[in-house]
Length: 264
Image (cartoon, rainbow, N blue to C red):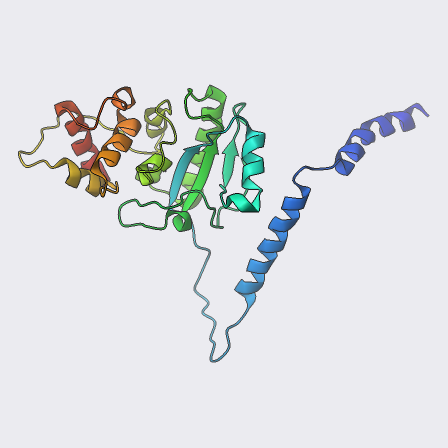
């Protein structure tokens, strides 16, 4: 009898959990329904002459775009990303306590980048993974949050063979609209692990004809608004000086030149 009671005590939490109402049960059903719809589209053979090639695989992401949520909690972000009217989403959300929640298959196209550009790529949503960090945009990121991010980035980098230079921020690809992740984000720490580029100006000499706008463009920034591009660059690489105007001093020009060379 004691054994029966023990088994019931052990099983009851699992039963209650399985019967508990999930706040996202409805949206999970919508996700599965939409995924099945895409699967039917992939299976469909077009009308007319059709010869299926044997040489193909899944498209893979080639960039990782890092954001801050600009919201107060992960729950607020989950609600935002599960409301149809918001038309915004991401592949992953990382909460302040380090919890990682995946919201979309890596091979599917999330709506996280919006109107953006990096180099010659003008549809960043179609070639990138979006990661949102729970942060209101004005405070440092939690250590456990960054630790979880590093583990996730390591997985994504090796799974999809993403180049180090292709780990960038939303503010980098949309400098006139976005400033995330904020200036407290530890880009240098990430770069030291191979997630993004960093600079070393020890032996850098600027060429006489060095052009800031051209260097920013060659590095990847959209320079149609040069001032916005400079602010985005400083926020990423010179955060201590990211709120002091739109000019680059000699040392900052060397940083840009060095990064431009590394990206070639």
